[in-house]
Image 1: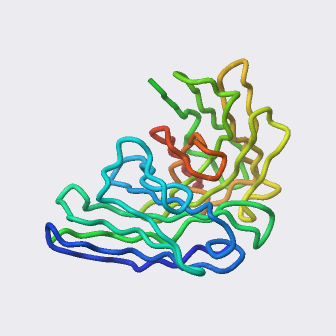
Image 2: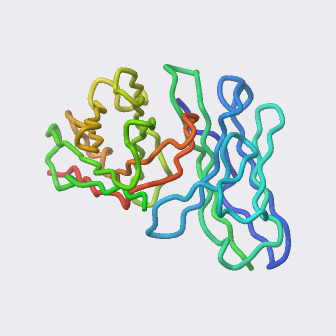
Length: 112
Length: 119
């Protein structure tokens, strides 16, 4: 299973909005609503931010939102804050081989 | 409080075997699918395997198929990853994670255990 494609880095100033894309195929992102997003700070375990494309777990700020169009899913962070600086990964169910999951390549978000 | 604690990671020679364990507490393990995910040093996340609630349905990533086996013992509140034929490229931090909604969305993760494959 090939990794989903994400931009290597995205940056923004505090208060701005940024969007991270996650591009796959119709065997993964485009074919299912099982896309999740994770935030990972250095040396820490990943944290679930969005599940099933658009849903936010309890405790995740509503500044984080998810969407999908065709084979591309997106994570938008509105009102960017310093603590949002981290690595972000998308993940999707895939049937390109045996039923499985595949992560994206990861995006480093920098708050300027 | 939900907790996942991995153990068993160590230095192993290429071709060797290792069994990782993940001790679960604070929730009913038998109610959830569970995942193993790894992260090589300085690299991204890689999904490895998952297992359903009673252990009779399992899936593996192609990269570890035939070498890694996921299993669970709900009575012992534990998840396992049996690894064999280890390669240098298997060097990584290995995480167990709870699949909150049975859709690959892991809401709780352990702190990870480091596996180093080197001669």
